[in-house]
Image (cartoon, rainbow, N blue to C red):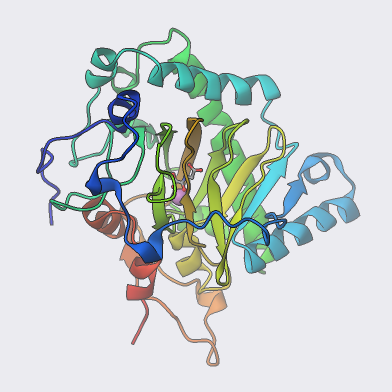
Length: 356
Ligand code: OGA
Ligand code: NI
């Protein structure tokens, strides 16, 4: 199946809608009742685990093991955690967020030069999924490729503000380093060879792509979502959240937990491909984004993915007679078509891979 080379209906920038100052949002953004966020926050003192990675690089064997154990628990119980002392400097983290905020604050004509299509999704976009008449999310985004190198094209990255390309390049390099470190930790924690997951991801041909999300102010935040519930289709995601505005919610049982980011933290979450590779030991967890009446929000979601054409299937070592393979093999290229066609749909896609 091929994705179309143009959107099937006109694209409306959510930022433009927000800038009109209208007190009501268009019907297309109004979610059915059961999907709407609840702003009743009393049970929400919970947070996802915060893990300090300092000792992983600098500590003795015992201290390293302690950090790895925290990561193991977070992967099994939450599928989501935030890391601090991750080795990416505060200046770079702040700089990356800042250049992208500036990008979205440029005039619309500048951004329109990068308007994307559903064919590759690269560039400035305002929807996921192509279905005509679908109910949409209250956000715009910019999507770009970093790896594999053959997909990276600086001309498709914004030329303004001036340092955006350099800062994004440097930030990307650090994220890939962190991604490789964590694949090693996950492999060891699962009792696999330490290079198992990196190998399953395609060794040096992994994919890394960035989606910068921009959530404009919304006059009726109780009727809509900035990003509908979904699990990330790829391997794992590194999310740099807005420093000032919360919005990410993670599903824990029947509750939605609002993530309270630690300063300069990066949020890590397991994607569907790692759920499949670990035969369900690690789960990709549903999450969504709520929006705000008086504050916009920006986040950088870095997707760390397997090479697009390798078959992803449960690791043989994690398949036993009592725990048979739970998922059918599939390449990430094929898998990714689902969200690109249908948009975010909770966990329905990974469920559909289940062996019958
Ligand atoms: C995503 C995502 C969360 C956020 O881009 O997949 O879940 O806080 N983003 O923007
Ligand atoms: Ni996500």
